[in-house]
Image 1 (cartoon, helix red, strand yellow):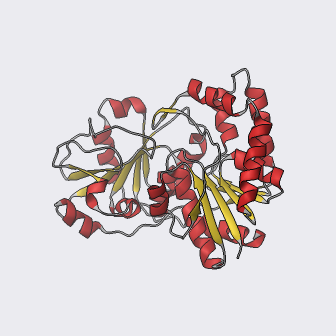
Image 2: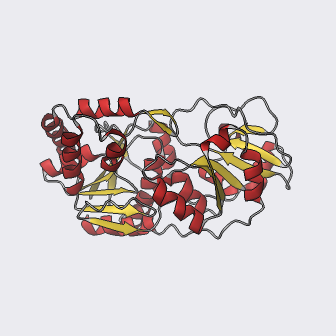
Length: 356
């Protein structure tokens, strides 16, 4: 039986959502593959989102980005965390290589911790990276001026370049410095439209618009403050806790999986980010997004969702000043675009099956 170790960055739930459809597609092609997942994402969240059986092992070191809030990067804390990780990089890699080798994998899949790729190279284990981004580009964007940045970037680039293949899932950053990159289609989970059932649980009529509000899996204490009360709109909070209003419901109260809630809604309000952009586009759901001018993926994500989906941008000032209602109304007046085919999972599964 072949063994695939899957290392997943714990920066929110987006990387887990990228990996899950790929593992499902691979299990259909290769039922003989067993999986070990290593991630800092909460175990129950991983089990809820990955639709195959898997073992677990302690996660590799993976900084990602420190965040003040879902859309606000804490650059000083991020730089300090990377400096600490790379203070004795050779020792880190040697220790991780020993831990990985003890699992005896036939292949490593990383989305997208680079310490895992460096460890695999040191242990002589073939490795594949999969993501719409890599941490080198994001570290350089926010921490490139740090005194240790040159050394840290050299380690990161060497790790990513050691992968036999970097599967870039559309829409993705260019990553032109990676020699073994391969662009494939979008990866997204497909939900069930349970609109009638969801409306019944929420106690809203058939003509009521359901709008999901989700800014990602980064810790978020938001309780829906500032959401306008709009005629014919019922808000569903994807995270946080709902205020005591009859037009706001927390998703946990619905007893419906997140991806099914998304597929059942008329629109989603979110920030620029791979996961909800692709999942909304692939489920035919309108997107009202708070633009992120400083986010390195934005020049690649935002034009894509405007081209393939029904989307409308909202700047941060407009969102904070209460312009959400008028912009949402304008978006809901437009018909949803046809769903985009999430072809990336099958392409990634084929590549992994060939290497296994």
